[in-house]
Image (cartoon, rainbow, N blue to C red):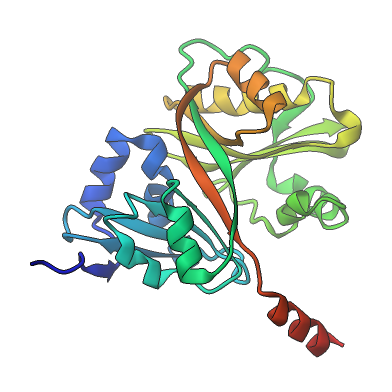
Length: 274
């Protein structure tokens, strides 16, 4: 009788390079991060060293709330649960991850995320909208100031961005000198670009900016010779309609699992802050 598969830190780079060619959307984040963000991640693989059965990609860009991508069947790679960070954390994985994460880290809430991909062969309609352009280093102060004073937590994350074009391709929609929408590519690989963080100010919605921002990123990916992919919440029907019209197709869906900070820890932290 054999025991559980071995878990080890790291992942075989040759195997990962092959895996992202076969299933680009599934392995894009790991393939990008091990090269460009090694100081912000931890990776644990499970199974044979040169042909792992699955792995955890742990994003530590926000140390207080890590985001984990569990790739592989958790029923086979259940030993990875021991390497999950403590609460609070977010885990993306198959439906079977929900019960395993809950058993390891306590009560969770979860929703469904669809992963989509588009492979345009001609210029993407709408990608030339004059309101949208690439964010350069000269725009960084305006973007950071806008994000830092924004009421939306999603946008506030842009205040900490490093606007290094080698690491981050960022584009924005503008109303004069003021940003009113933004997006970035979290992955830029020959196999796939992953578009992320697409946001439009509430006052500017209904003007086609969401479509224009998405089309701009798709066109940039097309010019680089790669398809564009993105994640979208299953219940976000408005965004799905936009993506469908732009030619995105369903790849798969994952459970997005939120394990919040325990109430006792929140109360203690609040007491310490006072």
